[in-house]
Picture 1 (cartoon, rainbow, N blue to C red):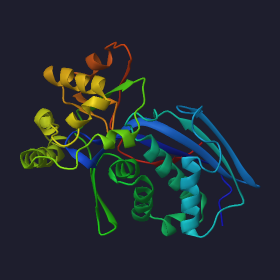
Picture 2 (cartoon, rainbow, N blue to C red):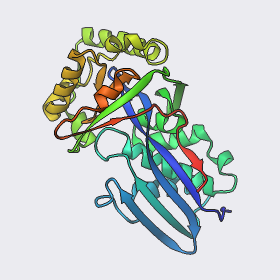
Picture 3 (cartoon, helix red, strand yellow):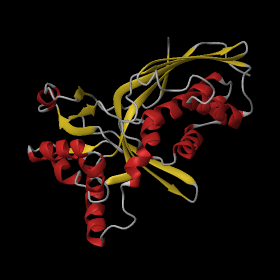
Picture 4 (cartoon, helix red, strand yellow):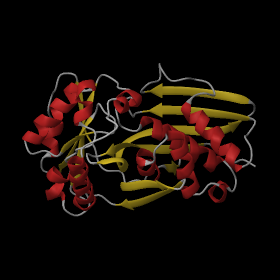
Length: 299
């Protein structure tokens, strides 16, 4: 049985890795896609506006629709028809979790339309399905839970720990005009890294969990990465050059996810000056850390 009401789903952008937390750390950001859904009479009526609207599919292979149908199947069956309106504000192919937003938004929309959906697909199961679809849990965990998340898989199970970022944290995103496919960024990584680099990365990852919540004064050293960013320099040289420039100026900056967006983990004193910068080829956006994750909101 399905609800007749029209529902609005708001789903945040996310930044993964944050330097050393490769495939495990995530931060939800105050940049949102919205999905308005209702059960229709028959078939699929889908409209997409905003970021990527001229590129994404407008049929059942659209990622939001695939996620909705996956959730309906897990909960016992699909409705006869769907009316879906997507307003995309998260740039595609920039390392800001657009695919995770589509997956989690679709799963949450289907759950909200289904009577008893919260019991059939609780947050733990929703996160597991989202991880299955995305392939790794870092972005989807932050998308579901909001805040700063550490996510992992263990024997097929997905775990997540969520914390609130320090209230002084104010991320600034430097978004380039060009896209980069995650698969291309992953192909740039070596199969083996030096043991010393792995040890250094472990220490920085452990420190980042504390720095981002309680000790933002330690973010410069805590965001040092030894696993992936330097290996990706050939496929995103402008992004890594900007990371170098910002860090040389004392700003804790990292590649956001698989890039090519650069995220500065700034504060309320320095963020306005960063956000006011005009850089050719970059859109600079001052954000907040989102603490709610995906939400069902009134129209």
